[in-house]
View 1 (tube, helix red, strand yellow):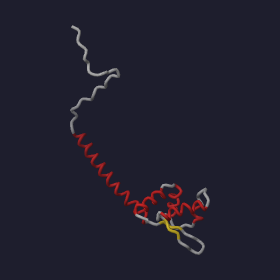
View 2 (spheres, one colour; view 1 turned 180 degrees about the vertical axis):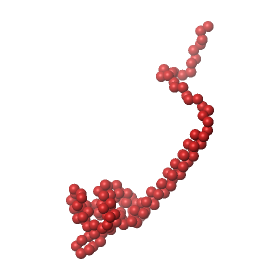
View 3 (cartoon, rainbow, N blue to C red; view 1 turned 45 degrees about the vertical axis):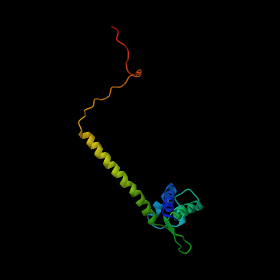
View 4 (cartoon, helix red, strand yellow; view 1 turned 30 degrees about the horizontal axis):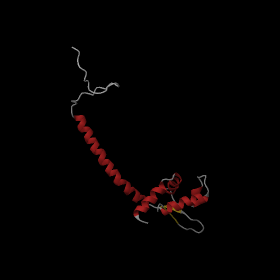
Length: 133
């Protein structure tokens, strides 16, 4: 899987609230499929499909402990997603800094312009009527 495909898979996996809840539970420690399925009103096969999606994205791994298949959270895919997002944070922070500077500059200048008068609704253009003499 290319880095771009892995990033896509990470964000697709994180887009689902059930998968995010599973990750939140795994952040506290390893858990079996049965333990992960417990709080949800969905079947164990449905939870297994969510786990496969998380595993394909590299967000979790599944081991084997006798008959138990404990799941645990993996950090590398999270780090890659965080790094990608962080680049955009830097861009937006720079944009906000420039906007703050511009706003401070505009506020420091004295106002020399008069506010524009609102135009009436019936205005049709420049007045070109001749004066009656």
